[in-house]
Image (cartoon, rainbow, N blue to C red; front, side, top):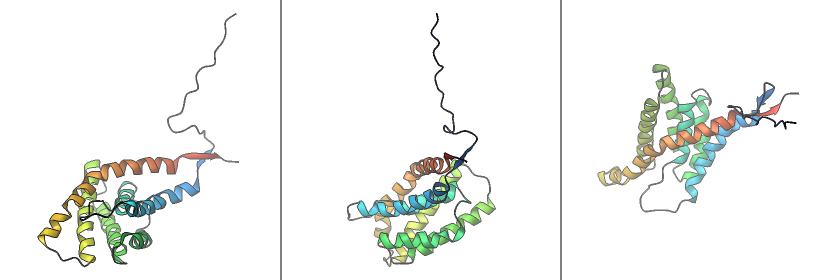
Length: 186
C-alpha cells in the first residue's frame, strides 16, 4: 500500500484570492492619504538640530504617490494635505498649501506634455521638485537668502533626492497593500 501525500499548496502570485475577491474600498481610498499624513508627522519625532537635515517626508510621500499613480488623487488635494503638513511642520500656515498645490499643477502639466514615463524620468522630476520645494519653503518662511543659508540646506536637499527611490519603493509596497484583495463577494 502506497501512502499518497497531498501535493504542496502553492501560493498564487497575486495573493491567495480567487475570482470572487474584491479590493477593500476602505484601503483603496485611504492608504495613500494616511501614508502622506504619517509622513508629515514623522519629523516631529526627530531631535532638533542646528541645520535642517531631515527630508520633508510628507512632501516626499505626497510627491511619490503623485508621480507613481498620476490619476489617484484629485488636483485640489494639495490644499487639505498641505494644511495638515503646515499644522505640524513649523512652516507658516499656507506655505505647504501653496507649494503642494503648485506641485500638483506642475506635475499635471508635465504629465500632459510628456505622457511616457520611466524610472530615471520620475527620479529626475521628483528630484527637481524636491529641490524647488525646499528652496521655496525657505523663501516662504521668511529666511534671508544668502550663500551660507543655501550651503546649509545642501545636505537636506541631497538626502531628500537620494532617499526618493526608497520612498518610491515604500509607495509601491503600500500600493500593493492598497489594491490587495481582501474579502469575498456574497
